[in-house]
Length: 265
Image 1: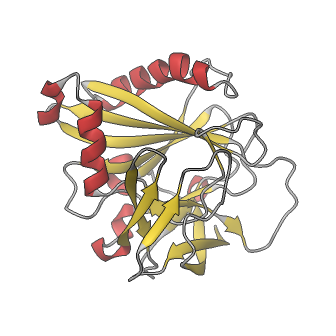
Image 2: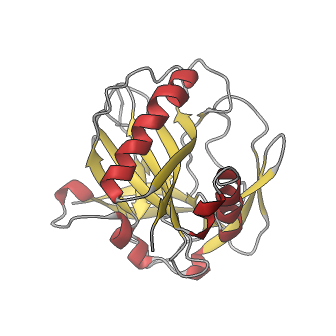
Image 3: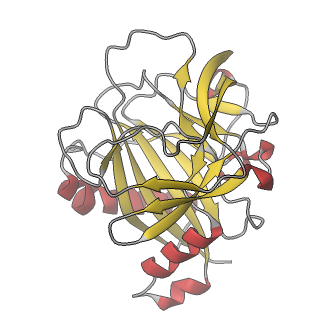
């Protein structure tokens, strides 16, 4: 079954910059120069296919970590981070997993912090080769032996409090993505400048989402892999809005945790 959704691609050939110096949800669009498109999105629950990180760049999983204090950033870091690191390490056969950041996606959370952002309605991937290498070096300053290991950046996306009705997360199957689709997007932070990849429209893109995701489920996204071809950085994704608007009982609340996993060759 397919549905029509609106997504915001990046206009190619333009220098893209996003200001991340504010606190709180902020803008849903990362850039001003967007290419609005209506795309056909498959519901992965209804497809006769098993989606996986290495084949498609994403996978749906069940996840029960015994944690519910999602309004508390300190508890997320001290309690949830270790739980997620151990779960990913055992699930994917990694030697070491480090959880180094998280973002709560909501327009109605009270906390005004760097961890509270709006759902992103710009098609993007979280890393370029440049920014992935910067983060790898930052996360291995105290363990230089990890720098020779194969590594992956894996994001864990979790619904919070209730099922996702508004602005579900949708992904582009990595098998339908080309190197020419990725464009550097500069992120301006208070203390540094980062970079991610904005994505331009490609008619070959095949979009997937999973309907009515509930707490107890999660999405894994492969946003960088050191063994992937150069400039084919990771899975494009975006919050997506249905063309035919509906009334939703609950606004979207979700959290994403950013991790780096190291593997033996």
